[in-house]
Amino acid sequence: MSIGREEAAQALKDAEAAAGRSAAATRYQQTSGYLILWGLVWAFGNLAAWLHAPDQNLVWFGLTLAGVIGSFVLGVRRSKSGPGGGLKALLIAFAIAGFGFGVSAINAFHSFEQYEAIMCLAVGAAYVVLGTQTGLRMSAVGAAIMLVTVLSWTYARDQFFLWMAIAGGGGLILGGVWMRKV
Image (cartoon, rainbow, N blue to C red; front, side, top):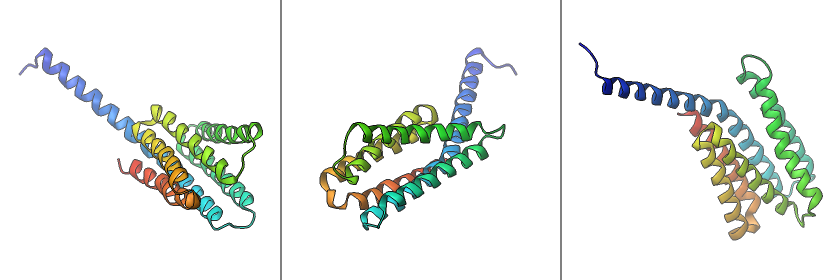
């Protein structure tokens, strides 16, 4: 039995498509832990801000530091050949933090709430951009973060931190679970 040229070409296309889906599933599973980790950071940080916890900035600093350390550990564990994944995770975390510090140095915010909204938009945009390499699910998570940020700022500003804890943090956690279940 011989196989025709068109059948061989279709079989090759099918194999390439399957390899692409497999690679995307692997990337999703590798990034899911980061989303769950940062979802927890966002949920607890925004919940502390909503409850007017004393020393909110210190709470956020501690949670962010835990998130950066956790990201490094996840990156090292993910990268079997050395600390390359950990360094990439640190670079992304420092880029986002550097953006936040830079914006606050250039523009005086009127409230912590306003600063948090800008940071949520920046993180959402970063996830959209990361999705160009990871897969469209990451971009969808980033777009959802930006949408929730704008909607809660516009329509529920008195509950902004609560919305960002539940929808922002919870959305990241659900996005991580969604990516893990590919």
